[in-house]
Amino acid sequence: MQRPDDSLDPNRWRALWVTLVAGFMTLLDVTIVAVALPSMQQGLRTSPASVQWVVSGYALAFALTLVTAGRIGDAFGRRRVFLAALAAFVLCSAAAGAAPGIELLVAARLAQGVAAGSIAPQNSALIQQLFRGAERGRAFGLFGATVGVSSAVGPVVGGLILALAGPEGWRWIFYVNVPVGLLALLLGFRLLPRVAPGGRGRLDPVGVALLGAGILALMLPLVLAEGGGLTKVWWLFPAGALVLAAFVRWERRVARRGGEPLLEPGLFTETRGYATGAALAALYFAGFSGVWLVFALFFQNGLGYSPLMSGLAVTPFAVGSAVAAAVAGRLVERLGRLLTVWGLVAVKVGLGTTALLLWLAPPGPAAWLAAPALLLGGLGSGCVISPNITMTLRDVPVRMAGAAGGALQTGQRLGGAVGTAALPGLFYLTLNATHEDYHEAVGLSVGTGVAAMLCALTVAVRDWRRDRPGGDQNCPPESSHSHTHAGQN
Image 1 (cartoon, one colour):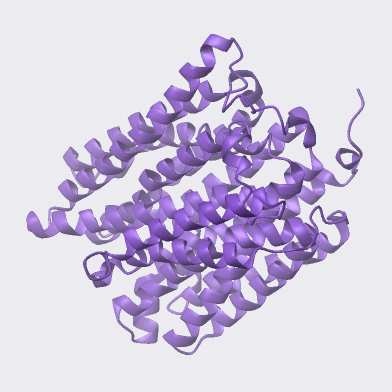
Image 2 (cartoon, one colour):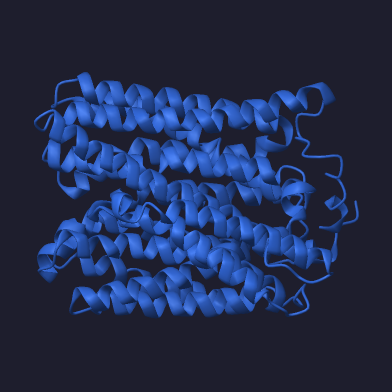
């Protein structure tokens, strides 16, 4: 069978592992820092609101950068952008670890978030560029495993570093990126393919400004939630929606005039599976992301666990997610959207059962009793994140793969920001209302996250049922033009 030239790159699998290591580092840094916030606050003698920016500032800069960085990679070369961003990430990690005060630490984290947001879309775009057919499904399976597992193992890795490194161990959470990043950088220079850029080298500055302003307006109240951001700057939500509506109109205008928009409107209207997959990802991460902060608060503050023990308590989920994601990459071509339906049901059952057990079980055996349910939830999550990435991006033309991957991950980051603001907020509200009943707080908070995932399940079931009459469950239809780009990959 004849294959496209770029899929014959003999280094494609080794190059993939380089990008996955870099991607794992950047996504791990979203959650690994959360367990170290008390240590940072004590070591730097700062306020909870200030130290919270170490987490929220990184997430905000990460989300703001994704689509623009993906478009820059499409236009000027993914290898070039990936290597430059990885070098910046390593430098910013070293600067964060050495920061003498909270101001410099937050500044380093903001810059680190920009670098991480520039790396992420190149990962999915390079998979589009290097792989075809069944190989692409397996590669996206590994990428999906990286996305899912990095979120789940962050508390474990953070707790382990703190346990080994002592009082100043929080600095090593950043320093550990330096040797790993340098090794990935050296291997990347050697293994990543040199391919001519796919675009004309032009950016859409108005689109960049509108998208950035819209995302900032939607995320800022969420990252300021602990300081009352949801009540003080709530008006940013409708303002952000209006700006994003203006962004959509502008992009359509640029496309009609034959220009190169920041985000091609045809991705959502003509590319099979993209709109459905992007919506499902945003909804799933809204229910999924905040659960880990709630678990950390419950196990550490409620049950008195150390950061390491708190991380180990949720390890079954990480193990299940890693195993299922690798296997799901091989099954997605055969089962299609049905695989994500099964996965979402398993996540809901697993995390729903966990919420009930932690609410009702005695404190001593709570973590042990919840382990099987967490394992089931992890297996389900591996069948959601990995296959959804494959089905969302597999028919995206290579020339716009970076921007498409960036937009998909922007939706995930926005959903994650909603979850990480809402679920811990509900946890604290329940504590105040119940005179610090941690069991009821964790039950209601995690249960709310599970309820939010029902929206993602509804999208998945609707797409699966719409696909059934056609008799091909591998190809969820998007529109009558869904096949126009399939041959342009």
